[in-house]
Image: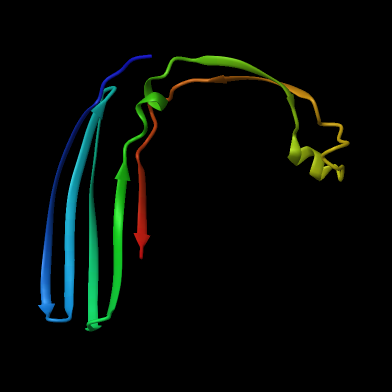
Length: 129
């Protein structure tokens, strides 16, 4: 397999002490990658608050977004084929009402193939803490 990808990113972070006991953090970032003729970019951000009402207690909270390009092996990998003997289809055993030890769907042989997908899109997420 083979392929290449260019990646660019820029970010900024700002920490603002609002009071002696209250601090906020704001950050932003822009990522872009170019691979297989695709140019995909995304802006992400994060926001955090720290509150220390007394010296021995710190309360934190945060919210953020994220962006992740697909792994290169999922985009550029060559096709692979394989064979798995002796597999159990647990879902079919369960829906048939059979135990896993004595099931009609034990010992199955599975042929499989894996190949790349150049059309994979990036992952995005939101997180809170």
